[in-house]
Length: 158
Image (cartoon, rainbow, N blue to C red):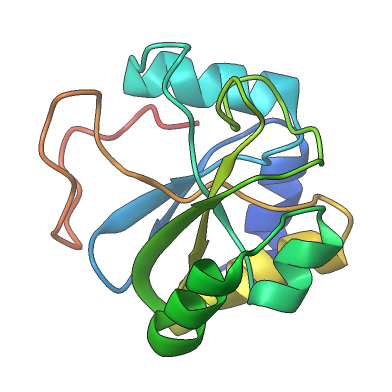
């Protein structure tokens, strides 16, 4: 057993690795959203088109605003009503992430997970200087998201 699994996961993310984690809906796949090597690895593994943006995990509106994200009144109401939970908000953001995270216009998808492990991983990654992590589903492009704890065929996610 790894004595500090979250710490090991964060160190792996810091080195450009990918980490699978459970969410309130499906399994997610994390890369450090500010890491070019991590995002290249994520896009390659998912076989995702370069133009398809990837959401990030945040703890809430105030943390997202600290990252340069801008919330209008409607986005604030939605976040207040549905976060933490299974809602992705797309908002303008001035912060620059690795290629493939934000849309071409700079807007970014934000999730605030209600799953305790997903939230803890995101919080620890930020606290240890890795920055925000991605909130994309654990599946290759066009395939159904992973819903089971037994993730057959994923040996090689690294």
